[in-house]
Image (cartoon, rainbow, N blue to C red; front, top):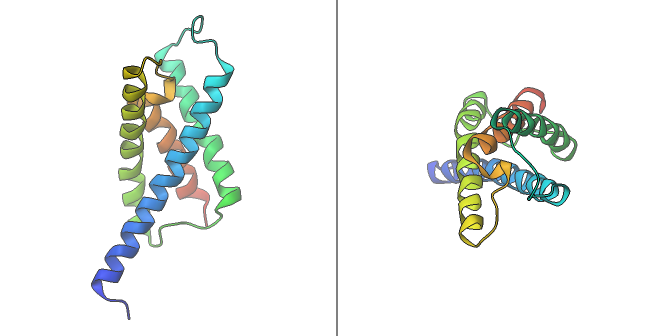
Length: 133
């Protein structure tokens, strides 16, 4: 029978793994998109950018199901909690990365804004929540 401390750390590590998977997926998509656009001529429409981020999140969620077929978090309450908490945290992390990039003279990509990062992470979380075993 696990102790309360072991249970706490197990839940903590499961949440961290869920966040890490989404951040890594978002960074990979972000860097891939950066290589495809011309930053000097590209124009961004905020609504289209958000919808594109959500669509990319759906695709990333489907790809993650190929790599990780099972839920990382076990138990419905933990999965719902992750669905609510993880996307804002990932959106914040991407926004912080974008601000850091801008301070160093770079340009912020679309996924490096909070709302787009949140949309990507929420779509990816929702796909995993719905379809992972």
